[in-house]
Picture (cartoon, rainbow, N blue to C red):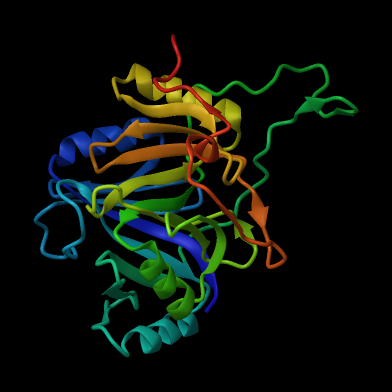
Length: 301
């Protein structure tokens, strides 16, 4: 099975108009809109589908209120989809759409789907950078972003009762990879490719026993775009949850916002790229392992 990444996030939302407004301000492109649904995409065509909470096509999901109800994983070929269907149908119902997408649920109860990817390759994105001994930008100012334009959906993070159980499903059944862990079964960072970004799917042990979405993360080009995006969306009236800051686990810069579609949305950039040679580490889950530094309430104007 050759995974590409997250192809679509499907939300079930209480207020479709507010959810549409958030993602319009967030910087993703609108693909379609009707009274009952909205479809957006990032630059590489990772998709965000918004549906009313009671829509008949939505899996039941976990957690209360507006939240992610299904994660669609992109794979390279129809053969990969068939292999996944054969594996998961051993112990759960698997349904197939007319377009060949298959749907089921994971061991947490989250809806999961698999399809031949619709994601597109990137063009060169990095802005030129000057650093000691390396000069890339000559006779020109640095790149200044008016807002963020998310390039891709990077990962989801969830609170669960038993991270080890969910890890076993994704590692044993879907051949994901463990990148890093928190000690005492407090959490696990997983990726869907041997070589790729630090994590695509993360589960943390719930402190109160409730199971719920924590956030969905959107990749942007650099730290300057994280800041520009955060300032822009703050100006639109959306509230910071935490950030900006820099994670210790993954090395990524971040800024989280409250999302009316469910939990939080994160701008992030500059995460670690790991390969099959990477050796997972196990560390204590502490404030320091969450972030090298962070601001709790955003930036001033």
